[in-house]
Image (tube, rainbow, N blue to C red; front, side, top):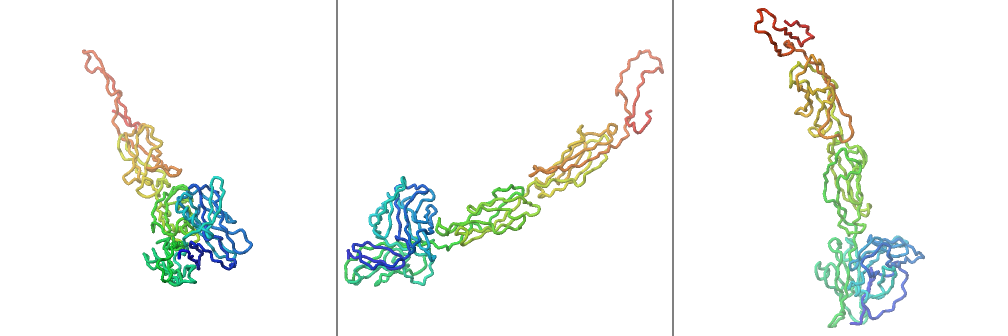
Length: 519
């Protein structure tokens, strides 16, 4: 049976190695690609953008010559005339496989596998050596972007089946036949993973007809490619023909929605944050095939609570970074925001997953402390140091007991002699003024101080500083007369007469306002 050939009948076209071509009737036109697979050979691993690789020829049995093509590999693009070009810089390591899709005039989607093959890859050279007729090969010279085209045989059956196909099962995939089946009884079988090895029985083949069946749904996330062998042996023969490899590639279906790494994200944002400040990043993943629309998702914020100010946050649709989008954060009004973030695959038109982002608005020093009254009056007896003069109170709308809430007081005017001091009370809301030195009623009966209040940390934005006026009245105290000078030296003769005047020493009353007589 070494000269017999297999024929493939079924859903997809594939060819076994053959030494005899069997004539067939001229078929009617069937819309589709002119090859069941396109292979483009390149001489360098590094392909630059705009490099022309070749053409994926297609017909829909009309006069149309321009079609809409889509590559599921973002590194490659297909023009309307079928010319395949490099879209983004790509490094080919051995080979790179992907699919090109288009649609007929009736709207039916048709796909074809494409391989970009670095010519030094031995497996690729082997394929090039054995292909004929049904698979299109192109050699590409990236230097001058020229190409040479040959047709070579492929001794491998390639099938594509959708992930999670619903059946009914067993589902017919294709059929193989030996060219000797009209003169001999041929028995067919398959061996390998998915046949007689784990997962056993996933694929079966009818012993008499060569029909290949799928017995249950496929899951690309579990296994993306099945490779097994097909055998054909004539009834009574001692030896079977050379087995042929069957490759079943599981086509990804959009059966997985994006999943966030956390069900709820927690973060903080300062109320004085500027527009554009990065707050937090959310991350989602999709178990569908990478670098396809099924796993290409976009982020968006679909809800904000509270809603005011509107559109306070924005999210980068590609990387999930959330930033402040507008001013208006106010912890005193809205101390917390809850965002609902959605990630939708198929570039925003497919399945979606959601997560919550809870942002706590942290306090910024955006409210200045204010005195509870603009004027304070007090009386202090003269000559007393370290005496409490007055206690002043302030209010502040920032977060209690925070540096933005704690008060700090300063005497800014009215005390050139440094007679007074001010300190903050233990509750951080009071300014306590005391005398540093004893006051002198006779020098000044009143002192008018101006006191300012700020916080322990600077204001987040320019704010007016609150001030208060303190009027201190000095109380007069009855003080003893004062001799001037305090000490007086007198010299007299020793024989001074009795009752003679030695010196006149006068004293004055410092309390001149009292008009008291000194005796």
